[in-house]
Length: 403
Image (cartoon, rainbow, N blue to C red):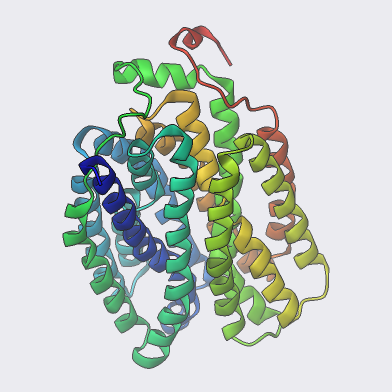
């Protein structure tokens, strides 16, 4: 085995572990909404706003953290971000005011996630494998994040029931601290067969992407993905309780999402290497619209809730390898972390609105109905936005094209 192949394998394994822990804990934050809100007398909007702001800060910082990773490497990026994530969880464990919750859950954890999630790690993986294997490699690494969600959701619920919500957060902080030494095994060795785009000034790279219509269509579609997954991830446990289902139903649904997303992201990566990624994204968003509509408008039971978790699991993070792979095809891999970070910013703006509006609409109306209906409409729009996207390399001359 060559050193390049060995480094690529270690990078994929290490990235998978980082994603499993980072995103697994992140997906479990919705379980803290009720216990923290009840203990401190907050409405649902206070906690929902903090997690929504976390996603917004994560998104705003992502292009800058991505540019840092492109220049200084994934090891430094993951180490610094994991440190911020750990401190944020420790402070969140003692957060007893909305401002402390914002500092910990929003600012520090938002920064931590920007360097320990898909944008940085999948870009590093993408640079380390040949173009024909890139979509599949990204799909495998993405599936690891789903496995973390499957494990951490019931694990976090068990910790809450055993130790209480505050101690559960401290245990999570200890798990994230394990990423600090792990960061040093994440060494990039660009694959010799991977295409090398010409080195350009950062301003020229940004101008190239900004002048390409398909780049913005992809970003707008990713906005919808963020809106849906964060709204569901934060609010479905409380929503199912409102529908007279047991408290564990929401945890089980989210665990099913994580479990079946392992297969979904793997399949997305495999299909993305054989078919048009934008067309796959369009189909994915349309199926999401149908799944959400059936779940919302039909009578809810444990079986329908679990079926919804299974279907959404197949679709949950399948957008990530397809979206990142499309960007790599269009603009190459040299500045992939930064460019996917810009698209991811739109995802996180959607995440902010999905998480915050869920709490706001519920506190104002006593129901999540308006947000469920909005999620359906947005999903149809995302499908239509992705259909005309052309998956092809964008030459430098195309920077003259205007939107």
